[in-house]
Image (cartoon, rainbow over all chains, first blue to last red; front, side, top):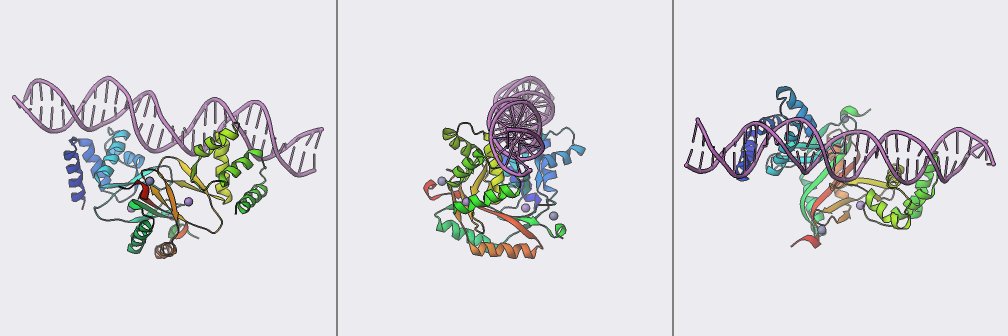
Length: 143
Length: 143
DNA sequence: CTCATTTTGAAATTGAATTTCACTTTAACC
DNA sequence: GGTTAAAGTGAAATTCAATTTCAAAATGAG
Ligand SMILES: [Mn+2]
Ligand SMILES: [Mn+2]
Ligand SMILES: [Zn+2]
Ligand SMILES: [Zn+2]
């Protein structure tokens, strides 16, 4: 499925008249190779060991492009850092965030999605996107 | 019900060994007198006309205290400003946020709350609080 | 009233996000 | 392959809300 995301991003780059660069490919590869919800800083630091010349700003701009192209989603989980994850087209999930260790797990629930549509409809509201996050203690952090 | 919130806050102040001040009372009064979801800046500017000596930092610190005492909730709706609303004990609602005009409306839905508990339980997760926000176009901003 | 403690407000600082700018790289065209 | 306009890069500068610092003022217990 990373093959698909790479294609989506490359098509996006081409369609926008942007250029394909070594840095973007390296960042894309690193970004797709994990399923974590990474902050700019985290991805930058991770890359730095193997690619010390890639700057923070390039990581920042590239993650923005990923989000714009549709292969990434941007989050604010309340720890002061913007986080990104790569997503497959048509898929959706929401998050459980541990307030102690910061662990993020995922869930998807059709009933919730359906009720959201009802709620929006009853308010004459057209949903563009939504945020549903459960904050608390993960099983490892209880007790 | 504002009577109740005032009492909760004053009890909180007393219990913590903090002091009752003119500024805190003025800010509390202004905060309770609206049902909007105010940013620090907004509340500060609103107060400034009648109380030009109250500083931004005092509004900031007082809103934090409101949240700590339980009479206010803090939000990040993605516009870069932290927002506060006053809440009654035991009540809960979530939000619809218009991405065009910024209007914020409210809803509460028992089914959603119930499903959240199920989801948490199935992940061995203990919920402390949650965030559910629907972003899109309010009825006034469509078309 | 006294005085230790808390509060206040202006100014300074923080920190992540974003912009600027001089230099480099890409790719379209020949 | 060389030329060239446009886009990309990275360091440094800037932004902006949030937060901290600090000296002066206010509070309230005794
Ligand atoms: Mn996720
Ligand atoms: Mn509300
Ligand atoms: Zn945890
Ligand atoms: Zn609207």
